[in-house]
Amino acid sequence: MHQPNFVSISIIIGVIQVVLDLYVLWQFQRFVQRQKMNVWWSRSMWILGAAMFVVYAYVAVQRQFFRMVTVDAALFMLVSLWLLPKIVIVPALIVRDLVTGVRWIIKRMRRKVKHPDAPRPAVLDMTPDTQEQHTQARRAFLAKAGWATAVIPYAIVGDGIFRTLYDFKVYTHDVVLANLPRAFDGMRVLQISDVHAGSFPDHRPFQEARRIIESIKPDVILITGDFVNFLPNELSVIAKELSALHAPMGVYASLGNHDHYNQPSEHARLISAVRGFDIDLLVNDLRRLRIGNDELVIAGIDNTGFKQHFGDLGKALHGVTEEDAVILMAHDPTFWDKEVRRQAPVGLTLSGHTHGGQFGVQLLGFEWSPAQYVYKQWAGMYSDGDQHLYVNRGLGTVGPPIRIGINPEITVFTLRSAPTTA
Image 1 (spheres, rainbow, N blue to C red):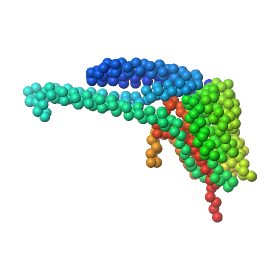
Image 2: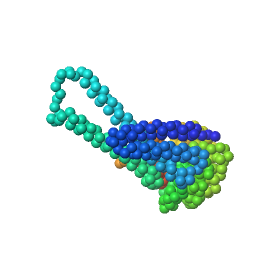
Image 3: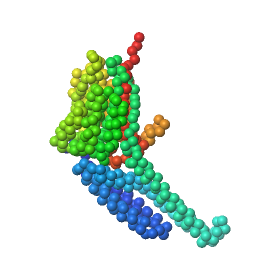
Image 4: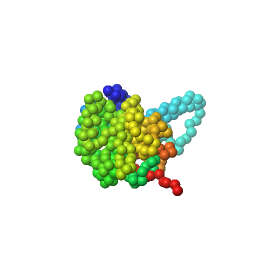
């Protein structure tokens, strides 16, 4: 089994959840006590925290060993909404405590060095009792304001779960493909990637993606890997929609790293299932699309990257020459630098895998995501001379069912022949 130890990963995340919850709930309990609020404000949060830990354990087991059904997916969204905002809230609380501690230390030091007989400066002619009341009132206001701002990360996470998660965005690109025959000029190639069928609560999100694809009417459809999270039976939730995908020149696909996270027998069933949807799955193989006497090569490499080495580029490009126009499906974008860029006669490489980080900022041409610190090519188009790599942001999700600032993607490429010279 070529699979990371996701059981250990799930346990680590569970421990992190407990630590974050204990700290935040302890802080909230102190706030309730200081504000002399009803004790059930804090008790109810402790009960909810315990319930969310049980929900997380259940979801982790379902996600690892079974296909999550609609209720399981809804619970996963709920526990994600409970946990993820604390990643922002906890650092804010720690900083607040550090600042309070530093102020307390400075205040104590000043008291020690201050002459005991020195007269106290008047503060707005207030009596000591009045000053203390004013200080307590200010602290109470700041505490309430601080906890009120905790709503912001919950709103952002909620938007990423309930709106952006399945708000599919269509990206369009014109690509000058080296050696592309004039007969293929204007051909439209549609790419989707990282379906992760197990991440969908039911068929409706992928049904919407298929509706968008049908409205575009591409000439060919390419799917660049990660059909499932783990098990082939995850495909059942979108089987009808996958089998309905159609393009005049065919639907082709390659495999991703998650498609190997299973036993050999399960992997064989996955391949058989994908091909049963009338999808031409290219495992280190190629097809030559023909218009008259002209040809365009569509090749698919098995996954190489993320501690997997299933790809055989020589086999995938068997018979390809420098004169051919080639589109290569390679799930992991790191493969481009490893074996394609300035090394193989491939004009356009299509990848996925990164999901665009599922979190980031895309505004007025500015793009940022934590994924860029892990992957040199993490989203969008990259070029080196007449060789191009495109990294698709994916349809499904891995890990938390959330996308903040990074929409799920459907990409349409209009192929262009290189301009001729007189």
